[in-house]
Amino acid sequence: MNKSQPRVVITGSTGFLGTAVTLRLKSTYNYHVLGLAGRRQWDLTNQKMVDYAFQELKPDYIIHLAAACGGIGINRDQPGKFLYDNLSMGMNLIETAKKYGKLKNLIMIGTVCSYPKITPVPFKEENLWNGYPEETNAPYGIAKKTLIEMLIAYNRQYGLNSTNLIPVNMYGPYDNFNPISSHVIPALILKIDKAKSTKQKEIELWGTGNASREFLYVDDCADVICRSLEAETTPLPINVGTGEEIKICELAELISGLMGYDGKIIYNSKFPDGQPRRCLDTSKAYEIFGFKAKTGLYLGLKDTINWYYKNKQEKRFEDFFSYIQ
Image (cartoon, rainbow, N blue to C red):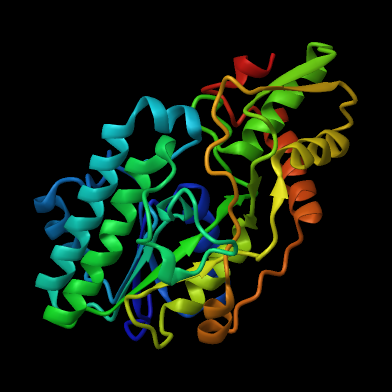
C-alpha cells in the first residue's frame, strides 16, 4: 500500500452492492480499500466493535453498505430485525465517526422504501417526510431515513461530513438469489428457471402485477458511490436511479422472454403489491455528480441472467441450489 493512498472502509463489502463498489474502486481509483465482510468479522450493531474497527483501520472514508434487507415477504416476517439492525449499525457508525474526528466523508446508502406510500411521481427528495412508508417495508424505510436525519443533525452540531444516497431497486451480477429473501428480479429469475426445469406450464406471482418499479443496474450505482467520495455534498438526501419505471407484469414478461419461458403468468391479488409506483427524480444526482445511468434494463437483465446461469452451473448457490432442482 502506498501511504499516500486514502483509506476507504466498505461495510458489507462482500455483498451484492459491496462487491461492485469494491471492484470499481480497485480498478479505477487510487484508494486503499478495506472491506468489512460481515457480522462474523465485525458486528456493527455493537458500538465497542465499531469503535475498535475505526482504531484499527484508520479510515479516511466510510462507505456504509451493510444492511438487513430483502423482498416483501421477509420484510413482513422480520420487521423488528430490519428496524433494529439497520438503525443500530448506522447509528453506531455515525457516533464513532463523530468521536473519531478524522473522517473526510461518510457515504450512507439509504433506500427508496423510505418514501411515503403515496408520493407524487417522480419522487423528489423534499417529499421524503410527507407521509408514512408502504406498510410491508416501513420498518426498514423508517430506520434508513432516521439515519438521514441523524447525519443532518451531526453535521449541524459536530461538523461531520457525509453524503446520503437513496438508490432505487437494484439488480445485477452477485445479486441475492436466495428465494427466502431475494428482491423481485432475482426472485423472478429463480421462479422462471424452476418452472422451465420442472416443465411447469404456469407460474404464480404475488400481487396484481400492476405496481411499477424503477430498476438500477448495480454497476451504475457503484459508479455514483465512487464519484461521491470526494464530491462537494451536504447530508441532504440525493436520489440515484434511471428515472424510468416498468410494471411488474411487463418485467415478468421481459424476463420470461429473455429466459425462453413461454408459460402462463398468474397473479395472486391476495398477496400485497407493495408501494403502487416507484420512480425517482434524479436531477440532483446529475447536478452534483454528473451522474446518469448508462445501463438499460434489457441489457442489464441479459447480463444478470447470463451471470446467474454461469454461477448456477458452477454451483455457487449451494445454500439454496436444491430449490431450483
